[in-house]
Amino acid sequence: MQQFVRSITLAYNNLPRPHRVMLGSLTVITLAVAVWRPYVYSPVMGPSTSRTVPAGAQPARDLAPEASEPIDQSPADNDDDVPLADDLDEKVAGETGVHEYVVSTGDTLGSILTQYGIDMSDVSLLAQRFPQLRNLKIGQKISWTLDGGGELQRLSWEMSRRETHTYDRLDGGFKESVANQAGEWSNAMLTGTVDGSFVTSARAAGLSGPEINSVIKALQWQLDFRKLQQGDRFAVLTSREMLNGRSEQSELIGVRLRTGDKDVYAFRASDGEFYNRDGAGLAQGFMRFPTVKQFRVSSNFSPRRLNPVTGHIAPHRGVDFAMPVGTPVLAVGDGEVVESKNGSGAGNYVTIRHGRQYMTRYMHLKKLLVKPGQQVKRGDRIALSGNTGRSTGPHLHYEIWINQQAVNPLTAKLPRTEGLTGKDRLDYLAQVREAMPQLQFD
Ligand SMILES: [Zn+2]
View 1 (cartoon, rainbow, N blue to C red):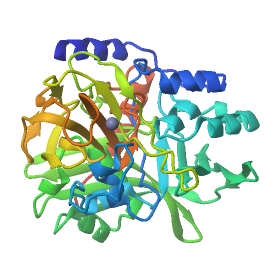
View 2: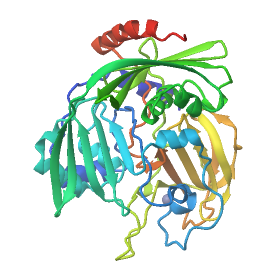
View 3: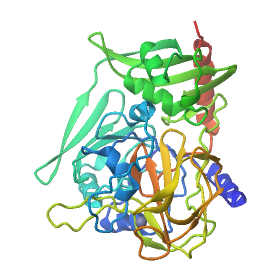
View 4: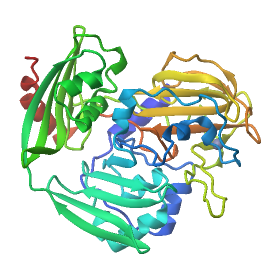
């Protein structure tokens, strides 16, 4: 399996990196194919840097495994199945109800929005009415808000630092408005020492919420923020837009963190992603499927919430693979087991956390092979599949969560393993040479 994954990764590394991302013809049929063909997925394992929180009053309850299966549900059992969340999670989750995404290689408006379960009819409507949305570029920021029923209310597209287009739902369609940012951008260097939690220390050093968020995301694959020591140092170089003496928005350029006698660095490239000093990718790659061989999809991802009128649509926050009881279930990426236990509806299940932004969950298992707190590697056996809990036949229910938002495991952008190449790499290294000497602890 490892060999197989390596050869795929190698193949990806040889793919060209187009700079323009075109939104292809957006017929309902192409979208339908992209969303529902179970074994076909984008060959580009690009990054996904969205920042999300489920809209609605009880995000914690949405995270519980009981909320994941579409079978008619009595109100969720009152157990404590919510994976642990701390102030770092809150930071990474960001503003309530706002989902954020940086456009990367191979993305289209359709591929971005549908992996989060947004209705393809809304995507088609937007693309037909506003053809410029077919011309997303790498590194641009897209954000959106949903209403309580999971319906798209607003889409924002940051075309550049100077111009943002916003599309608001209105009268059965969408209305566009354009905002121009007039502030001046300048660099700021902030340094601090860890005293208490990282979030508190960073705030004391003058970093804003979004800036702390960027630092956590940039360094998530290189260190565990919960294991920082008193006295660890950090230096943050950020670019801030100032308007009327206030900082309107900012963009992290580079960060250095010294923990013990180890220095870790991350710098932002023009694609909006973070790389190390040599331009290498920081994330560990994920496997697309949690089993050695691929099994038939018996139920697809379908995150739409219960429709209060018809009462018929219920969320299915993962994908079901039909497989014989006893099939080895594998961790899709390196991470830490945060749950391995029995939850009534979910049966025996395992939750793994990968970095700060990613979480995967495996349900209806027969036998658990890992314990909470255990570190696992990609491809490790974590359980044997089964038919436990609220299940109508032997299958594995598998979920991927990005920033506490369930995404479609068959189409989700997974963390990238490949680094920068060619001109992108040279540009990046020039940037690093300029930024690195500035990252001094005073
Ligand atoms: Zn399921």
